[in-house]
Length: 296
Image (cartoon, helix red, strand yellow):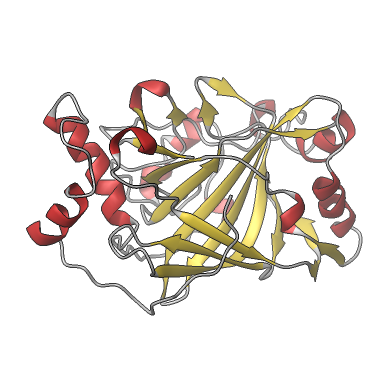
């Protein structure tokens, strides 16, 4: 994953015009898709790398909602549930490899993280570490030398995972939440999934230590040297479920050992008093015609 330099621009206000659509389509190989619906599904998230819609409203308090299918059916009282909700199953049937349809290579993000001393804590719904450990640059699809800058606001955990990879739910998922510098209503989330395979993860050790005292946390320990990302347009996975999120789910599954996993899971999936022992994940949402793009 590229951690190089970027040239920022303060804001990019493309109108939803035929001109911009044509600029996107010009970078797609002719006859790459079997039908117009597939082309439309891919064009929309590519355009969103340059701009996406803003949604604002009230943020519900934690005690206003619960996990579990029965409770989530009531989220519509406090959320506007549209057609671009998260999480989803990242399924091969809706995933398109960028290398197979783009004229030129493109990787959508660059990461700029630095070790920072932070304190983490459990709240009613997750384990969260708040603070700025750096930023994520979303590379413009139209203008190769420009980027939108999203500053990290916090990261938190779900056990088991919220996203499924090819139908499989993993043991743990971490979401690194970034807000756009020029419009903090726009969000980019970098997601990592973990499996319990007996291998201790040094980054998770830092996170666990931060529950006791301020600890230097180095996001760079988490980033694989080589990994693609699955990209799609979606929403927050908790109320208010705003559909303002650019999702980048890292394709490489990371390791944790049993002790590390239990630090999180004993609060949720191993706790019958929490959502009936289900865990702190939202139920899967339908793709509703969305495409997932895999960038290598």
